[in-house]
Image 1: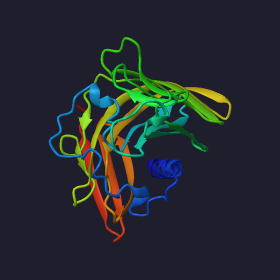
Image 2 (image 1 turned 90 degrees about the vertical axis):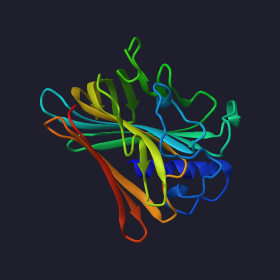
Image 3 (image 1 turned 180 degrees about the vertical axis):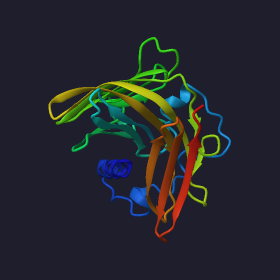
Image 4 (image 1 turned 135 degrees about the vertical axis):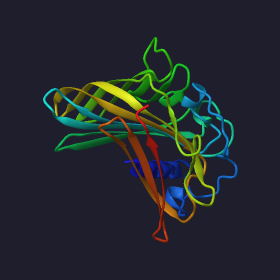
Amino acid sequence: MKIRSLMCALLLLAACDKVPAPQESFAGLGSDAADFAQVLPGKVFSFPEDHGPHDGFRIEWWYVTANLKDAQGNVFGVQWTLFRNALKAGPTQAGWHDSNVWLGHAAVTSATRHYAAERFARGGVGQAGAQAVPFNAWIDDWNFASEPGAASALAAMRLKARGAQFAYDLHLTSSRPLVLQGDNGYSRKSDQGQASYYYSQPFFTAEGSVSIDGKTYQVSGPAWLDREWSSQPLTASQTGWDWFSLHLDRGEQLMLFRVRQTDGAAYLTGTWIDRE
């Protein structure tokens, strides 16, 4: 889902500025980004500020997945993603001069169905955006936000989205620490120095409702938040990536991603997270 969504976003960017879609690397993410802020080792993360947008960087996303069950044992998957893509480097401007394009992607799966929907928005006019305090990320009526009175920015969240044949409204809670991926949040994507800043909250518990094909189910289960931002996450010889996370029965978690390369090799990295 992440790969398809990124491609749609970059195609939209090209249409907005009436220039050809980039050919180097996947959707242009391996093209030169010297004018944007760079991802470097040694960053000290600051929360809640880093939950919000990072306007100097070219691309970032808020990405939530959940594995859910109802009382009868029916299983569901939920995904919610918001991407911010900068058309050009430089300070963010007001109104229609804003250089950001936003993409939302949401999906629900059951044992027999998979439904997905997308939303697009130009920045600066209130249709989509993100803020750190109080935390809120939205596009139209799709929303991922802190609950009023939450003890900290990600302690209690509400997650909502809908499409033609599905909807969900979930409450996510966690009192557990965030996980900095890679080297203290510096996540390498190649041996040539491409990288992102990357952290996760893999300890969410989700409860709420999922509607699919006109029927609503009360569900609960584990959920996972990924946060990344970068300006050049791929090299010109990399063609995309695959990502997954696992919640294991004993309480551990595993994240692994593979960046595909034109020579047939793959750049692999992951994180083992213990139950504590």
